[in-house]
Length: 209
Image 1 (cartoon, rainbow, N blue to C red):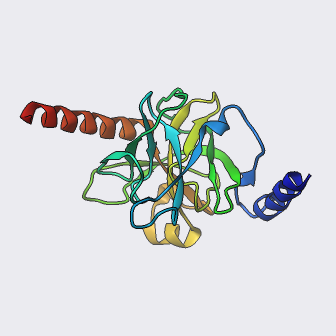
Image 2 (image 1 turned 120 degrees about the horizontal axis):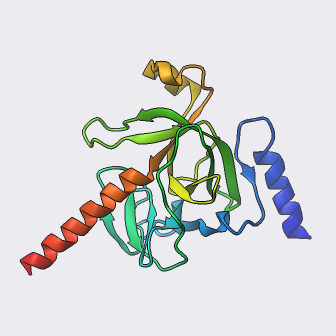
């Protein structure tokens, strides 16, 4: 009973017309997302969300430091760490399709935000050459690293950040004009590039031994 009251309170805080993600209780697809914490000198002090990449590795954002089992941090905001779980299907997103961003908030409540993938892509760092995709669904702090699902339940990327209306006004991007808020995700194609870099680095290390 108390669990249901807690989730209802979270729904009232997070849901509605305020553009925030909505809490959900259980879903066989979305439950593949899981919480991951910082370790080392910042044990359990920071959190994010993660999703399984393959049989041996999961993926989350690079801006979560000291993740246990982390073995590679990419040029973009992504890192791979050792973790075993059920592997979802991954694919490239399609502009215009319905997407659902999933993750956990600071209260560890599972939340989701639904919207549509936008045609616009952005670069968060002009030096790394990584292009991030955008959608108009709401996301929140703590969802970083969590999966973005297509309407078919396949993963099309991971949450990275969001841009407020103030952020967007400074970009002067005609393809994002009129959007009240835009969520940024690293698409499957860019994550796959980072994985190939990881594999190439691993192969080079083995060759030098």
